[in-house]
Amino acid sequence: MSTAAALPGPWMVVAVATFAQLIIAMSNILLPTIAPKMAEALGVEPILIGYQVSLTFGVATLATMWGGGAVLRYGAARATQISVLFCGAGMLLFALPSVAAIALGSASVGIGMGLLNPAAAHMLVTYTPDRNRNIMFSIKQTGVPVGGVITALTAPAIAVHFGYRWSLAVVGVMIVVLLAYTQRHRAAWDSDRRVGSSGEGGAFGGVPLVWREPGLRGLSLVAMIFSAIQRIVLSFTVVYLVAEGGIGLVEAGVLLSVVQIGGSVSRVCWGWVADRVGSSSRVLMVICLITIVTTLTLVFFKGDWNKVMMYALFFVIGATAVGWNGVFHAEAARLSPPGMASVVAAGTTFFVFAGVLIGPAAFAAIYGGIGSYSQTFLTVPLIASIALVLLFAGGRAGRGTERP
Image (cartoon, rainbow, N blue to C red; front, side, top):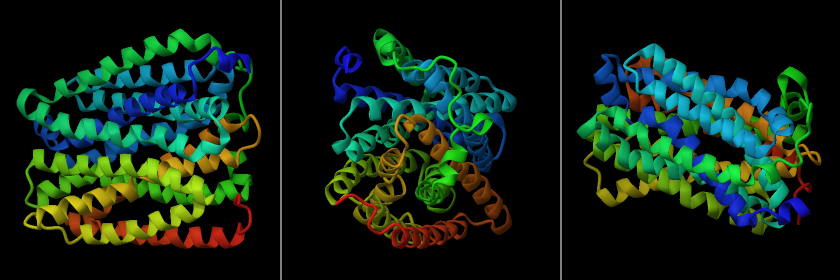
């Protein structure tokens, strides 16, 4: 198509989508990464980070209802720009020494998060080849763990040595770079926008479309569980290791970065495997099984474990609990009606964010009753087992629907 010909090639489209995903990831994982230091500065308990995460994803969940229609109406590039601008506003609010300002900043980041996936899905489906869908989406999703690695390696050290506010500046610089580049190609990228379109499903966006399609509905319910596990691991690992594992804040941040590295590397591998075997659901089953084993091991973690075993454990946790997203989003795009990838992405992302909304708050509430992070982490392999049952049930119901 002529519009595509005027744009950078498919790999540059993937690079732009990945960079935007990285910015979003850094915006939403920054506070959990520096939670102990920030809580000390504000005079609050670190466990409150669970509610901050849930607020962010609660707003993001609502924003997804508008995201698909926004892409159709304004275009994918403009929606991407709006997304990162909301994250930039959130960074400014995080810098203020006020719990109320942090709450507003969390809501702003949530709005940005809700807009990005529909925009990225639209660009990838439009400008990249179908035969590489799983690996393209998986590469885009590496922006999440890569952003986490950057944050985990830099934010705790910056917070300890210079103060937590300096941990926010790098995100702002990246936002400016992305805005400048996307503006160069915005007119061409957004040439297929539908002026006056509000998308599918009215006020509820793509959620009704996803719910009435059995394949998309089952996939979204599994992703809701996976996303709850992912956010629990990312939000509470540092606090758990510092409070009960005998690990210092900086070393805990390094271990969290290992989780993110595992998630980053594995996403591309999982996508490649799914493209080769032609079955995303089978790949998700394998991911789920390994998640059950590794998170159960995490319950018994001790800081005096062999270092190689320790780092291997956190790498594999990342490869599964953080590595599933690309295969999921590619499968959702495959099941989308023609021209509705952004609306379906918004609808399925609603369930992903709903899992994140429920997961950390439920974890914090259970911890409040138990008083032990390790025992509370037992909930993770439990809900992963539920996801595995759903995957097996969906696999039997949909046998023969995967491509050969």
